[in-house]
Length: 544
Image (cartoon, rainbow, N blue to C red; front, side):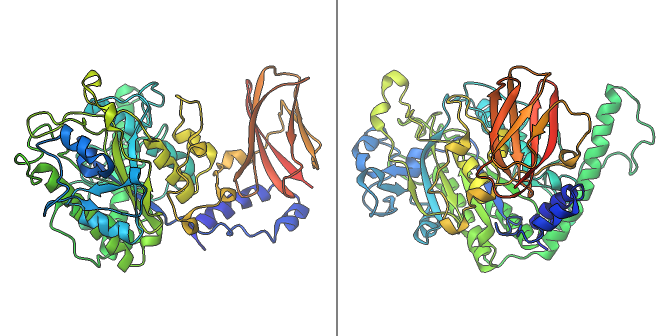
């Protein structure tokens, strides 16, 4: 049985064990696998650390003269042997772009329909500090407000969506390429969601944390010191458990494509081998630094060679090899990758053959499930003036739109999970309403009816001490929830038998009641959660 289907069935069985025989019979023919198996789908995030210069990565052909005037020394030529790569001449005029000449691997992926370029990615109020912007990207914030500042968006997502796998013997996240584990993997409650294998030999991986003399203390004091010691003991246990899963998958896996001899290639080569070996981890992050190109971005006036060329050449070769490897091993259906950088660079060169901190940057999304093409239009270079320090400021895509689209349409997360992961406090909208609909091919996009929440075991425990009355139950048309002990606004969430959220709302009480329209719900058993000032209650509801 598929793992995801097993989890769904296990949750259903826990609930049905509390219901009469007649209800079990009514549901016995329902097919819980109609949404397909999503359990092997994975995201691979490629961090271009330092702030990639988007304007020399994606050259706006329709305003090339303006671009060249802003960058007389470091521009990418439009003629000659070092000319930019023309990506796609079938695009509209304001989407015609050239890729940096080093990005031949990107061009190859685009031509086979495996790459989409997202123009002008950023967030509402850009912070041009490396540290602050990296933290914003890690925590899912927007620069205007600071919510969930002590947890990461990947941690919150995995904690919520994969809660049935939190105690598994494999890490939900794997990080390579940085000495420090990303804040993005830090959950609100769980802290051992990911493992960093940087500098380790995956075939014989063993945690550096194992410094407790082989055995943990037999007695841990009840104090702040004891809490910290217990944390170290727990992390040590997790690391040792995860190390076995990493080593087993690496030894069982293989690579079927020849990679360039670069650091990023070695990172992605390891990821491909772990996936090939059957690791059940969900999100991988790799990193290449050096994109803070204040000087010597190009090695000479009018010369495209230099730091930026070398970095883009490494990224292009590594990413193309990674997906060719997955394709040869018939693993490509289940993997999507993307590049991201904490910010971009200014439109105007700085006089040191480099560029200073900017705001927006392009994002590249790769893989067989990706709907190839270009989203957005070329940057408006008339924005970049002396009065705004030559910044391009219009954000066409919030970085969280890309991540949310993939979390929902590729991995299958519900609106509730998306809102727990990201929320647009600037516009007060859910990112489930702001998705990039053209990002994935239709055959790989999860249908809306399959977006699933996972209920915990406690959600199926029904106490007799109720503050709310739910009637009529069974219900045919309108479900009423009534209390004499509450005032103000009440929130509810209604889940189907397969723990998928099917209805939610927040309403002011009317005569101590809230009304839920159940007319269009299919027949079956539902779990109703009611949130109010007195806490949360769970009720079972039968729709007839």
